[in-house]
Length: 162
Image 1: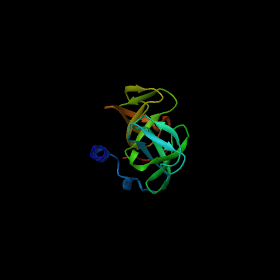
Image 2: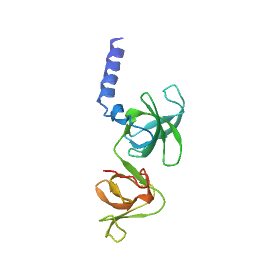
Image 3: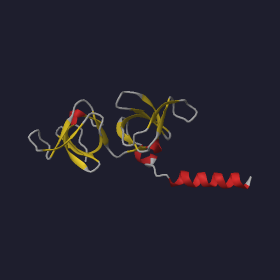
Image 4: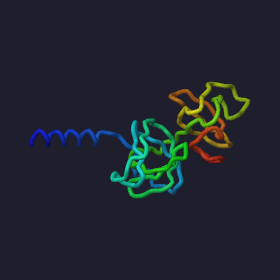
């Protein structure tokens, strides 16, 4: 019995040590973009652990659109259009985007005439910032440049992001 109690205490300690985005920070007006912060996140058919798992995401940084909120649960839509519920503490409000339809050029300034820095294929995920006038700064593991926002999922047309 003592071994079982100490094992449960160890599990509780590990659970408390895992960093998650505060759920309170995600209580904004829907819809809004967030990203999966965990290495694994289960999407469920409803807002609770008693609902079946419909999808297992294994890609930290994947952008999702939060379309509804119920207590600590967020109903999200992924880049493929699939919707379901994820616990809010498995999401971050740090802005990410995914390249959607074509190889994109990451440029040194927000202009088609800007010098090409890097290229990114469809499916590449990066952090976004400085969005405005149809362009976003897109950072992929420290390598970044400006990309036309129309080639990214995770930012709305005309949206400005700091």
